Length: 192
Image 1 (cartoon, helix red, strand yellow):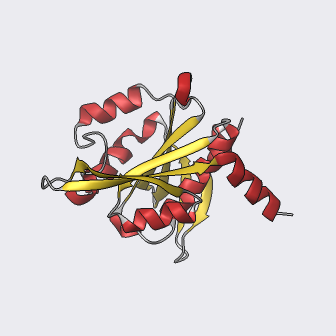
Image 2 (cartoon, rainbow, N blue to C red):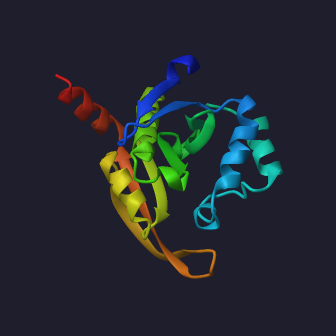
């Protein structure tokens, strides 16, 4: 398996901006807290945990376990600008499945950062031996839909009215899935 230092790499966005991608480490606690503190309520409403509560972040860092949740951070000028995670279950009927979550600072939306991070986690999921990746988000998040399609995910289900936004309005949720092995085969085949 890839060593943590091998996962540290530079990436270039559509506009030429360089970012550093690397796994989250315990020393990133303040930078991650600052990142979530800069996000606006319309972005924070889709995060699964109350990341404005320091106790939530403390728990994340205290329980950092790359075999369960692999957190990937993007940095610009030593500031976290995106957080993507690959969630895994080590046993049972879901052990072949990884679940992706991603939050990108709005100033970096539409610049290719999300796709760059998703591609890194897809490659890692292949190394971990995962067969499928899944993501779910509000159907009206058109940018996320385009980003995940570009990364090789396809919509598999829409569940109407499953969630509520911060104003209490019903949200339709889309579930997208990627076949990791097929993606890796296509990518490897295109390299020849």
